[in-house]
Image 1 (cartoon, rainbow, N blue to C red):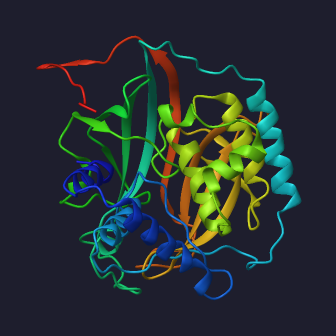
Image 2: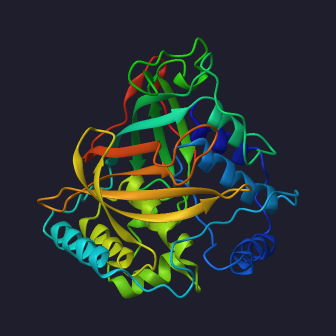
Amino acid sequence: MSELNRLREMRARLADPDPERLAAVRAQVTGRFGARSPGRGRAFVPRRTGLRLAVVAVVLALAAGVTAVQVVGGHRGGPFATPDAAAANLLNRAAAAADAEPDIRPRKDQYVYIEQRRKELTGPPLENLQRPYPVKSPAAWSPDDPPYYVDRRTEQWQSVVDKGQILDRDLAGHPTPFAPGMRLPARMPGLGGGEEFNALCEPGSPYEPNYRWMSTLPTDPDRLRGEIFGDAQPPAAKWQVISDMLTMGVPSARLRASLFRLGGTIPGVTVAGHAEDAAGHHGMAIEFTYAWGAIDIKMVGQLIFDPKTYRYLGSRDLLGERYAGLAAGTLWQTSSVVTMKAVDRLPRVQHGTVRARC
């Protein structure tokens, strides 16, 4: 089972928090951003990995009244950094390219279909971060149990009219060695057991974006800023919202364009140069450096664009420092939306069509 599905099951077992309690928790978490030293706010690794699972579990635990570790992030340049002109120029070109693309406009009886390719690092480094009390400097991985990558294909059908109805299909991952010439470990729990369907109900939010929620958002950048960022947020929180939405897939080309323009206003975003997405496309990237989790691991998040057309290709995250024997710059995960379209029906499985009761 993927980390995302484990997270959803965890959330389903919890009673909905009282609205006042949830508001207090949100203020408690975001209030801690400013209490850190300069250059340390909040950021999340996109939700496809165990990092995302651990971060959201912290928020769930706080909402349930459970003691949890503090999640903070950061960005280069400190709190008074100004937006980078080169990054803003690249993102404005990407916005102009998105403006020229057609929107996906499903009928009310259709579904939005999104197919993704993902590549994720797994093994001992990730297992340490999933522990309740991860250590900052774990022992380097052993040649007998090396890390490895999992290439995975996922599909999602999002309802246009049913509130929050989503169907996920995860296919068994294909393992690849961590580096050329290295062998795969004997134990590889990160592959999954084959085709897996999960019917879900997600109303949608900046941290759990879906079509129904995104279709309610304004496409004017100034109005959109207030909708998805809310009150004053640190640059790391803004980066997380934009990167999560783009990584999961934004059917509206106008909304994508506005997200790119807003990304160009975030202090700490810079041009990174060459990058490759999960589908093997080569492009140029903009990046944002942040610290993640209870042990403040430095991560570098990137958004990748076609170098000629400026079309958005995908995202990836790299280690920003040496960790558990892995060098800075090690690929942690990458994701690419390869298909996004309107379809007429849900897929059929062995026992009929899977539906969520929302």
